[in-house]
Image (cartoon, rainbow, N blue to C red; front, side, top):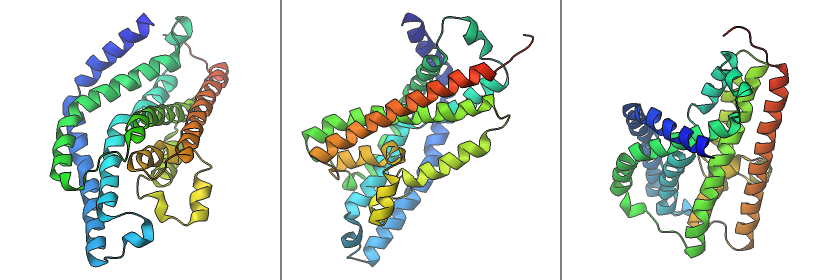
Length: 268
């Protein structure tokens, strides 16, 4: 355990060297967010009955996108999959096969240290942005939502990381995995509720999407905060999210075990 705490410390120091990069990334991420907020404000101002069709008031739909930004800051996988693939492609994982260090745990520690560094840098501009839209900000619907939301947020981060890790393991078989990553990202961007709330989809399509892990990477934790899921549905959804985390973890372990059998490195 001590060695992994050391990894987190090194990861924090390394990531904070790129704080200007993190800051610029955060600032530029506000551009599409501001565009979506402006779009929905226009929709609601031009159609006073818009909320009847999607179940969101104007304040709720705008706050939804603000929460998307918050969840992204805490859970998004930025470059971990590319770095893992590079480690495999360039033979850097050989050292982990010879030392008592679990590569998955090592990368997980780096992921969380990266998130901590990103939150530390992004919290000020994000706070200013939320302050500008404070009229649309809402408190959790109840104490249960306030407590369960952070738990679901941790599950979301783990789910995103394990899926990205499993995708990066394709580098054992393919020299370039960019296409695979972008295909998964495209599905995730739509099916997770990142682009728009899943309530806007036809019921049948929404039910089919809920058979995948993608809604639990964004839409589900936001739904908890906003009270879109409550009672037995909340606990059932949290259980399913936990099961998806466990399944993604198992897939990540499986892909590593199979990939290492195929892996070969020379020299160094």
